[in-house]
Image (cartoon, rainbow, N blue to C red; front, top):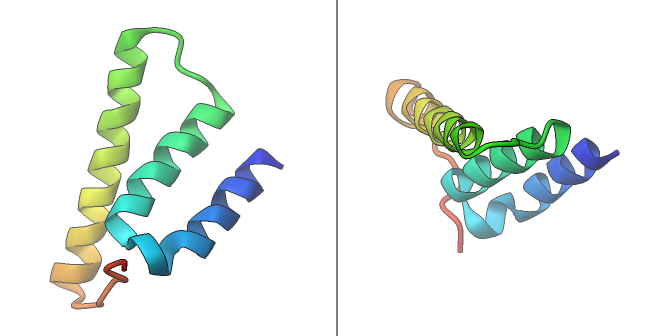
Length: 73
């Protein structure tokens, strides 16, 4: 149920906050809700995955496929 709430919040806030900010946040929260990091190293790995996923998604859709993503208000 927590994962559904996270995705629901992501969809609801996407037009207001934009793709890049929301994507990073939802990745962090989803990973944290499913298995909370227990050490500082795990938090760093989690943040790196969140940032990397957002960057790769951005470059694939915005630069390669030329799909305009929501910018946020």
